[in-house]
Image 1 (cartoon, one colour):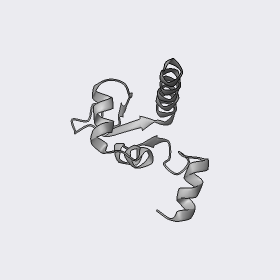
Image 2 (cartoon, rainbow, N blue to C red):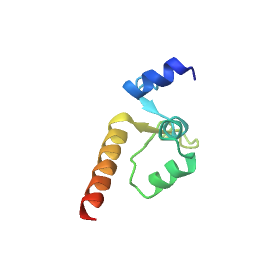
Image 3 (spheres, rainbow, N blue to C red):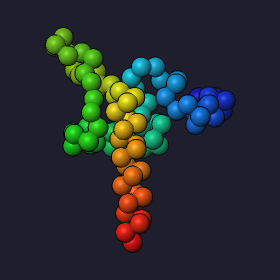
Image 4 (cartoon, helix red, strand yellow):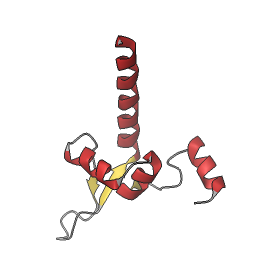
Length: 86
């Protein structure tokens, strides 16, 4: 990814990914592993969509922008609350 794209991603983080993000794209954006994304999905903390549903194939996992934004906001709010209680 070019430096210009990285800078623009900070301003508009999801503009470059299209309608839904893959696990790999979200992991790159968050700076974590794909396994962490899978863990959050399996714990049902991060909703996901199977684009191959009903086709008899392996799931094609995609994550909606709105679900990711809601997760990020909830996570940030919890961090602020825990700092205030200390």
